[in-house]
Image 1 (cartoon, one colour):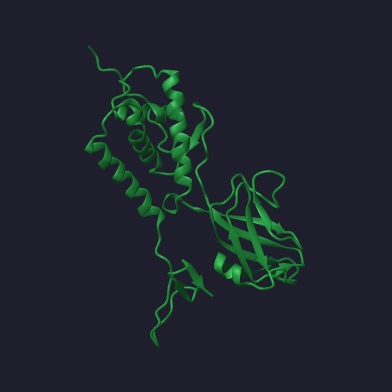
Image 2 (cartoon, helix red, strand yellow):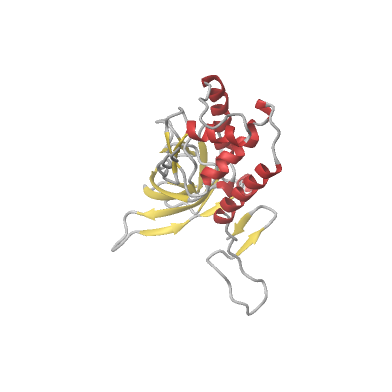
Length: 259
């Protein structure tokens, strides 16, 4: 009997929900090769997949890149809301988990635009501000509170002049809404999602999770986190030693850079 030709190669970063669900079920032996996936089981696993992607999006080590988006900064507004829908001042697809930096772009400068880096502050710094409604033509600091469904950005002082801001936030995976939806994944995420999903649905199908599957999952997660995690810039405190980067030092109590 002749050997059938191999199936055409998939794009390594393009797939859909049904293929990932089927692959995860095969990893735990809940679906045999060539077997049709029952729609009732697929619906249950799809919900698990959606929850898994939501969990990935909430974790910094799973974030593969940063997005820089420009907005017009509203004047005399506190806080400035960022999130989906027309009610937000800054409209984005999903409310950012965190905002890593904001640059204030001065519009009325010549010969070129000038960008001023705003100091990122935490809740303790904001709580200590005794004049939270102080106004000025230009803000110098910001504090981000990831409320739901809109995040709240508190600019300080509150700006009274219209300028643009360039916001750096995490790029998250697109949520899945149906089985055939095309999913574009960065390299390495396909493996990680399939193995994590397989581990997650094992109890649902009363299938034991093998040590081989756990090893494959750990290796896949290590690939992602190695690519995504970067050491922070810092300086030494010794006299005469050269500094590194723009930020002066790092406060490990607050997890924030010191200005």
